[in-house]
Amino acid sequence: MRMTTKNLMVAMLVLILAAPCFAPRAEAMDPVTIAILAPLAVKAAQVAAPYVVRGIKCGALQMKKMGLDLAKILALPLGLCQMTAGAPFGYFKLGANNCWIGIQSPFKFVWDTLMLPLAFTGVAPPG
Image 1 (tube, rainbow, N blue to C red):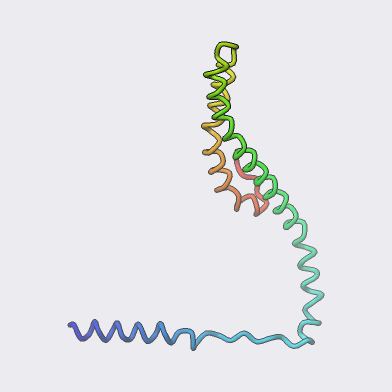
Image 2 (image 1 turned 180 degrees about the vertical axis):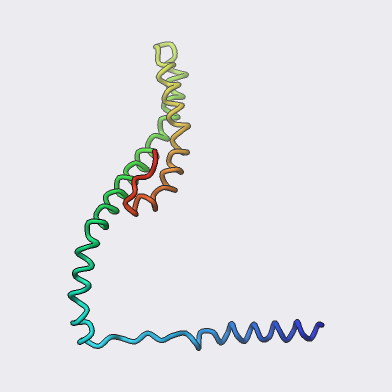
């Protein structure tokens, strides 16, 4: 039993080390083939262009949303200062609102970060 396991391990090791030898080789196209395929590639790019632009726009809007969520984290220390030092001057309620916004913002940031790849496909993420 022990010899069979050893032989199996040696065979697996040989296969793993020899695998790169059997990889397909990349070969360049000749210029005639490129000249024939260029008009087809241009047509494909023209068809895909509106979808690519839409994906970039949606992704940029999502990244802007992420930046705003990241900036709103600073509302937490502002709210704490308003709730403590500004309480005698009537800023307690505003400070509590800022604290709530500051507490929510990291969770919103994580959600928007997870939705970023979806946004780059051109689909508007929920929320």
